[in-house]
Image 1 (spheres, helix red, strand yellow):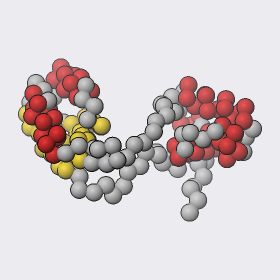
Image 2 (cartoon, rainbow, N blue to C red; image 1 turned 180 degrees about the vertical axis):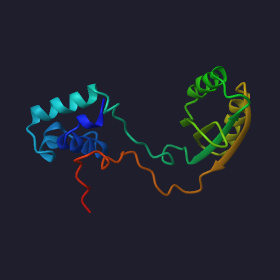
Image 3 (cartoon, rainbow, N blue to C red; image 1 turned 120 degrees about the vertical axis):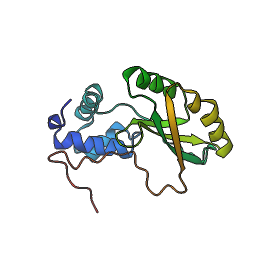
Length: 166
């Protein structure tokens, strides 16, 4: 999967799908100036080649009772394969962990955790996170306000992608 394999039409299809994954193929084809059959073939190819990993509905966390978002920096006692694997395995079992990144810098991992309230986050922290073997330190920062949240990846760095309309 090389981004060089994408032509301008493929990139436009990806842009449209990122903004509306439920768009009907006929409407997508119209927006990218193709007839429906070739458009559908391109979408299927983009899916098969891994450019499109899946389709989701984005829910409003506050509307479903998860208004608390916490960024958690975790440092391990040792950064060896076994410790990293065990930490990652255990983190994957907790649905409140929305994102987990292996990091460079002061901490080994950065997590984004959602919770219905501070007490629920405290239970997650004390009952689960602190009990993972090898965890040396945990620093939590509560998000006060979400200023920006994007799910659409920028495609302008791929050669031939038209700039978005102003």
